Amino acid sequence: VRTLAAAWGLPEREAAARLALAFAMPSFDSAELQRRPPAFDRLPLARAQQRRAVLLHALPAEDEGARYVAVLPDPFDRELQLQLETWADAPLRLALATPDDIHAYLNQQEAQAKALADVTGDAAPGAGVP
Image (cartoon, rainbow, N blue to C red; front, side, top):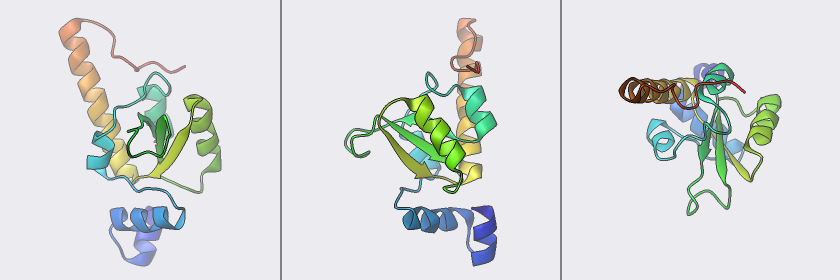
């Protein structure tokens, strides 16, 4: 997305939206990522951070019968798509987001998990890597 944004002279989010349109997939910005809860039981936070992608619970009215939405920064990364499909092990919809939006979402989720762990004294949920 960054390379295309630079080549097209566009902001990254606009380049991501155009690229997503070409692949017939939705483009998620930060607000859209926040609308769906993470599926850290399928793809733990630490692994999501390593892969720079996230599995979210789908919204039944919006996600075309999918159970999860896999958000990735590169629609050309077929290996990552296959891994996300394996981790989801259920109907899945692919979506595109900028690397920065995915990173910010995961950082926010990590901060929330740490805050919860500090309050409860438990380990952060979804923090482990399977």
